Image (cartoon, rainbow, N blue to C red; front, side, top):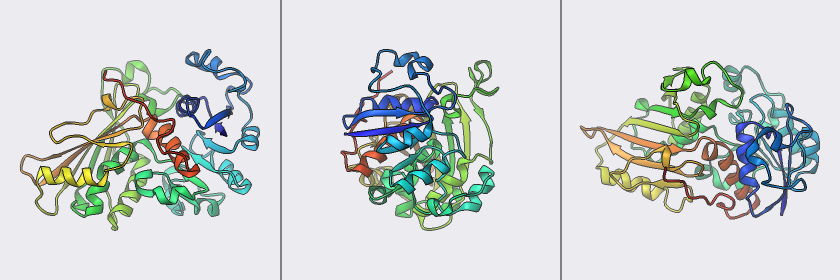
Length: 349
């Protein structure tokens, strides 16, 4: 049994992580921090937690340094730019650290991170040790990692949707177009004009076209998968729903392939993956059927003339796109069954 620490537990990702870990069979104690609500209980912030646990299982929210001192493994749900020091401290103390922000996702590519996030590295040697936590690609490295950079939500859906095609070399790398719709929770708990109900309801709104910070993260991983430089076109769309990501991914084919063979390529690549479901040929993935779960559903299609592939990828942005994938990484790192604490059948409606 383990004692888990969560930094920044009162944001949406922190709450989702708490919800999952409270039901994890290997976790017997949680400690959580919050700058905004220090000293209060999680029940004070989220009424959904009332009478779910007793005070001995989840003590009042406290300082981050106290949480890190006692926990066996630490998750950070802190905003971008605030996790680096905590990650360095945990590495120094020999404690596994799993970061849900973007702080460690760029590895040694400091200039790229600085360009998109506005700051350089304070501890570059720690970034060099970070493992990008996409289990379906880096499972072996995750097993021995000291620090795991949990992937972004948009990147997770895009990377899983493209990985088989890129690894098999069937995609024209100059033609990749990713269009992704996200629920409003992807913008975080802090409200803004664009996430205000009258602005977000009854409208699907593209934003940060050509300038979203997940673009370089996506392209780094696609380039690794392809073994060549990839520059995709990524367009995010804010959708009038609480949670979920639905990505439509199009690319030209370097040679003719039937729909059946394209489906077989994807099904074979993800055979045995516990959280990637390649749907039967003729089905279409929807975020509706992955809600609250750690699944990524993928459906494969061809354009009318057969020259292009169309891949639909669906995840819950708060689970496979954040907290659930973080727990999946914890399970792999600590040698637990990869699905522990994550076995959940999505609702049908």
